[in-house]
Length: 120
Image 1 (cartoon, rainbow, N blue to C red):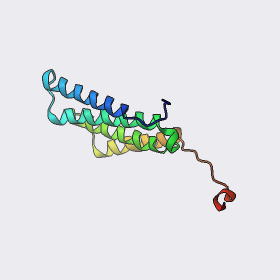
Image 2: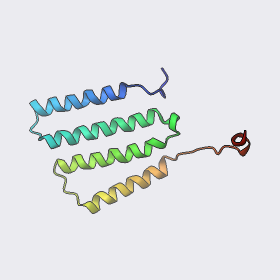
Image 3: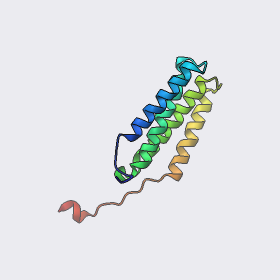
Image 4: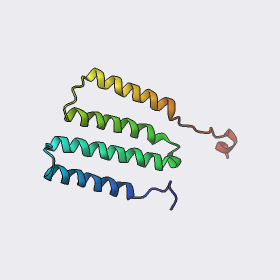
């Protein structure tokens, strides 16, 4: 199987990690349901980033930017759930910085189609 083929394995890995987080939180950590949900959201968002990177050849890399922004947003939400005192202004600046960084370092390239091929 090629690395760019879409499979269900990343979903299985993410589900397994989410179950491990829930197990550890239930038996060993004094986390609330909100904290556990925040960590699980960050784990699933990280799985989305990994999936976007492994399948980037099928969509020319377009989903990577959205996946990274979603992961950062989920990580910020998890951090706030765990007590990080961040104002909406701070989180907006973080998201703007990440968005600009993603735009600079992850460029989506596409080749224009020739008019001859479109008319044929």
